[in-house]
Image (cartoon, rainbow over all chains, first blue to last red):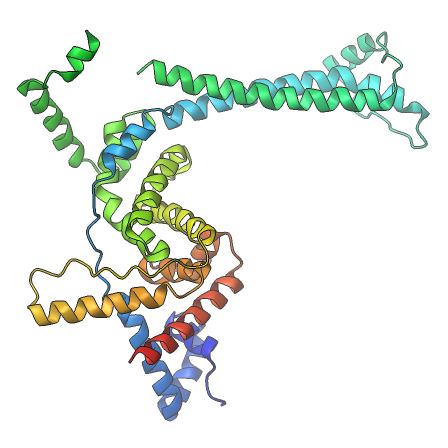
Length: 174
Length: 203
């Protein structure tokens, strides 16, 4: 067996080798003085970390931390509000999709590829029938893109403002 | 009127009540304190900070070097941990989770501050039970290790911290630092090689 390389010695010391490989290395180490020396040196290096003592913190930070978190909503409250916000947006997104998809599909009929709606069931089917009477205003594609882009920005800003107002509300209620 | 009330010293019964609250909190487990903090009890979180601030500070100190920077990172890490508290699994111990946050913040801080600042090698508080000679030797040895650690790239330091001081496995370090396991091993093994060379140089 060749001498053990640096990676193998490290894996050996970290106990990260399977039993068979470890047994082979043990046999090699028992016979090879050079690898034994390398291993001893590496072990001595790691023992310097074991001897490390924590030094005391120069000053208590608990008061500063408590003051800083006093300006933030309680973690669970924030999570609940975020869940409500996310849920409401998800429901809204589904409703918009159900309303808009048939129109978009109809408008896309002129495209060189075919889009076939496969969800023709219950409530949504009725909604599709109702939306048949609606049509998209005939404006240039870039206007639709601009409207969509502005919509996304408004959506992000509104979310940010809502979360910000939640934080404010939490601050004033203390 | 409110201002005058704020300036008035707290009556003795208020101080006694606060002390009773602190006493009661100090008897709670970490998991119980986390549960209280999740409901918005900030004193409970303050008790968690008091319990873990020394180890968190030492983690930050080993990565950023300077003691004032380490204090700033420690504070930020506790605030970050509070914000993320809802995602903490209370069935697991609090300290390793906290140290992962401290390590990541300290690593970001050290990487922003590159190239490595002047080495800060203040000696540690000596062990009161040891004799003066032993204390001096231990402090000297620790200062030497600290100095050597600070000569490593921050990413290597972070891996050494998590492996040797937090005793995480390769896989746990990989998850904590969002690095592939192969990079974790590479950083760690190269860091050890470099440290060995630095120690040999200084002898």
